[in-house]
Structure formats: C-alpha cells, structure tokens
Image (cartoon, rainbow, N blue to C red):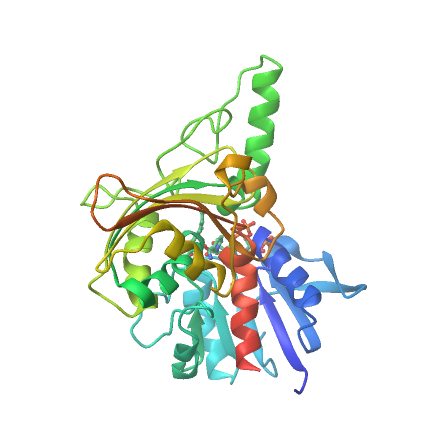
Length: 335
Ligand code: NAP
Ligand code: 3JN
C-alpha cells in the first residue's frame, strides 16, 4: 500500500482535530499531510505524528498533488472547494451536508454500504453523525428482518455544534453555578441544565415542522440503506453533554425479532458493541462511549405496544464514528 498525500480542510475545528488524531492512531499511510483552515488560523501549527505542521489558508490551489482530502469546514466551503480538489485528481471525503443527497455522490458508512465507495466521481459524502450511529445498528436488523419504520429521538452532545458551542456550555454552567447572569450566543436558549429541541440551533424549521437535522436523518437513512421504503421520523434534541450522541430508537420490522435474536445479530455486527445487562445497570452511556470507536447498543427490548418492533438505546462518539473515524474508514477503503 503506497503512502498518500493527505489534506485536512477545517483542520483547526473540533472535527478536523479528531481527523488528525484518527489518521495518526490508525496509522493511515500518510506520505505528507497538509492542514488547511481559514485566514483566521494563519500562523497556527498543529501536531501530527510528533511534528509541528503549519496551518495553511485553504484556496483553490491547495489540492494540487494531494491524493485524499478530508473536508470538515462547513457546507459552503465544501461546495466551493471540493469540485476544485476533485478536478485536480484528489478524492474528497466530505463531512458536510453539501453533497450528501446528490445522486452522483455516494453517501457511505463502511459497515453498511462499502460497495458504494467505488461509484465515486471525486467526492464521497460522510453522513450526519446522528444518522451514522443509527444505521450501523439498523443495517444488520434490516438484513435479518426488513426494517419498515423507525421512530428516533436524539440526545445530542454539544461538541456536534463545534468549538464555540462547547465553550458556551462551559461558560453557561460556570455562570449558573456562580449565580451569575448568562446571555447565550450560540444557542437560542441556555444549554446548561437544559434540553433544546432545535438542531441546528441557528436553523429555521422546515415547512413540515421538522428541523434540517431531523430531515437529514430521514433522507440519509434511506439513501445509505439503499431502501426508499423505510419510513423514518425523528426528533433531534441538544443536551448538555460534551461528547457522545444518544438515541432512543423504535424499529418496526416485517419479520418479528425477539430481543434475544436482535442481541445475537448485533453481537456479530461490525462496529457495534452490545452493552445490555439491565440487572447490572449496564447500558450504553455517553461519558463511556466518548473516545471509543464502537457504536454501543443496549436496552434492547420488544415493544409492548406493537406485534413486531424493538426499542433500542444507541450511543456513539459523535466526533469519531459520527464524523472523523467514519471519514478515515472511507479513506482506508480507498487506499
Ligand atoms: P468548528 O469547530 O467550528 O471548526 C470549523 C473549521 O472550519 C475550522 O477549522 C475553521 O477554520 C474552518 N473553516 C470555516 N470556514 C472556513 C473557510 N471559509 N475556509 C477555510 N476553513 C474554514 O466546527 P466543527 O464542529 O469542526 O465542524 C466543521 C464542519 O464539519 C461542520 O460545519 C459540518 O459541515 C461538519 N460536521 C459534520 C458532522 C457530522 O455529522 N458528520 C458533525 C460535526 C460537523 P478556522 O479555525 O480558521 O476558523
Ligand atoms: O449538531 C450536531 O450534533 C451535528 C452537526 C452537524 C453539522 C453541523 C454544522 C453543519 C452539519 C452536518 O454534518 O450535517 C453541518 C452541515 O450541514 O454540513
């Protein structure tokens, strides 16, 4: 396997920094690395494999001689620069929503639809974090029993909203505990000791009353699973957790699965760890899923209100499997 010239666009961000860590941790064959961000990061350096690498300003010329570029600098940046990179022969793995629903662009979770990677024309899209951890668990159940409908509610960590949001959570908690006033800037309401059912925090609600995050879960799930007939409804909620998205998922299947059958299937599923021993108070928790590569599933039980449905609790590190790890896994399949 020949080593590759790799670029990370958005390298100074929460997701970009994780991408650098994951490339290093998984010993991705890197010949050299280019770290790209905005004008604001001019003069900064970041470390990769013990070396201080200067951050360069992202431009249309950044991708000449680059084999693989991992993008996490927002949708507008991806729309502008991913086609330039692809034109220069670079394969882009894009973490934004800019290309996800483009029929020419594969939307990939390596445990679910690795075969779609080969269809790329220079850009491969990485799904939304909440979608990724859900489909890793749904796919093996779909293969065994055909998933017909999914009802999901998310409990999403603040790191999903970027570095400014993480800073705001800490400042907000400090202010409340010190009895001081606090004016939120990133979130529309205080996030400390609160749950906010609006993701993204700055996004308008769509005409059907859903948020764009909710509609991403609906549309991306069908595309990744390759089945437009799966009906999905989602409610996405921001909670005052640093890292690790949690999801309560109700899954209806054509063929009935017992809870034990589902546990057996999920124990063998790639990327999934079953953590399900209620008697011992064992179930997935965000604080323990943080910094782990697996997607954890527990509280597996048959839905008492339905003849053929399961209830699940799914937790994963939103910055790893939800973003950086999934992108690096795609890059690994490319090389
Ligand atoms: P963040 O912490 O705010 O970081 C944003 C990064 O983008 C920084 O490196 C920033 O550079 C860079 N950037 C912004 N505008 C730029 C421009 N015009 N040119 C070059 N670089 C620019 O945000 P984050 O949490 O890492 O998220 C970044 C993006 O990743 C999001 O916008 C989203 O599209 C994607 N994302 C995806 C998922 C997922 O579900 N898969 C989850 C989270 C995020 P400076 O430091 O120089 O400003
Ligand atoms: O809020 C979260 O937990 C996940 C956030 C994802 C995100 C944040 C800003 C822009 C996205 C995304 O990946 O869908 C985007 C985007 O639309 O690119």
